[in-house]
Image (cartoon, rainbow, N blue to C red; front, side, top):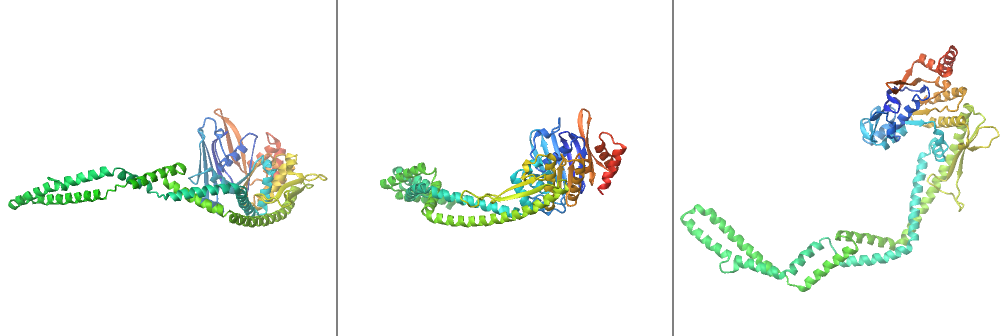
Length: 559
């Protein structure tokens, strides 16, 4: 239930807070005072798109906040918990719109997305605006309302999911059949490419190893001479480092025999002598292992050129070349098994078609049953709304394709349309052909009244649903809304005193000018003030004794 709505710097509203009650909340006031603006503000809080034009003149930011009681709404709590938003018995939604076209959304203090607001809004509030009939005459909306009434949303979703799978698989199969020639050409190309890549015997370490080997083979003579000279200087010439170090060690031994204060240096030079011998041995082995092989050098050069060619043809590096080889190998397996794949896909398609046919027929049959029941209930409501001669019928017609079979779609096989006849002797016509605004308003209320009985949305909002309705009929509409308010919180904007008299809570919206600014205010009326307001609605600018008496009588009749 909507507990309160706070609005700051929105259109002509400077700042106000409205605290709503349970049951039927009626909003009245002069034209242009801002009644509908309040409803539009709530729509923004619940995810409607906004622009900077809603920000009050000379203000930088528009702030809108709504507080809901969700104590008995486990669906909302679950939705909040799934998105990591802390959930208690109160839900606070805040939206800020700034002059630089930025908008921020918060749910219980946590930053949220517009999509999340819309999901929560759909579960919390159902707004029926002045142009609601435009949505009502759309065939897709009529179908959705019928499915909602018959609790067929799950079955309808299953039909839609099965149709999408069927369509995707059929397109895939058609592509496979239509491109058979193309596949054969690709198969030959892929086989050639795979043979070439596999024949190259590539590995991801090839390039680095080959470059190193090429450098060694191409510079073998230089490497040999360098190693030979190093070995000679360290070990294999007269006056070599190891000979000189040996002489120095001998002298240090003689010195230490007399004065051992330099024994540490003697130990160090022994270590150096051993390391020098080890180094000279290393370069001796190195030069002995240098490979002088023009044949191997030619093989390495050819392999490097092969890799460069493969990179030009297939991918910029060996890793991606090998990945491409894996891809075309899978494609080859797929193409070579195309007959097998076709047979498998045709079998799956047949199963899906059978399932789609079964589900669509089941949905169609349930829609027909629901349509008859809903038509009767709407007729009954229309009769109570002063349209006793009206006939209402929901057509559920199965669509047949050119081949004589059912024509499937994402919504099944049914074409659905609401038809009505408002006068005796008139043929049933599509709802969109109903000319009278009053008749359309009452028809919409009848439909919404029936649907609301099964609707779990806690708050329903009616913005001037009484448009085109006369005074006496307003009393009938008021009774309907009062009945709805037993299971829903109702917010209703009205100009009819006969309807307003049924309010559980009554708000008066007015506007005034202060400091060259238009100010909208909302006042919750007590019983006395409510009587005065209904008297004003009956008598015009000023209440009269007659209008006041009439107002009291209207209110009395609602008890």
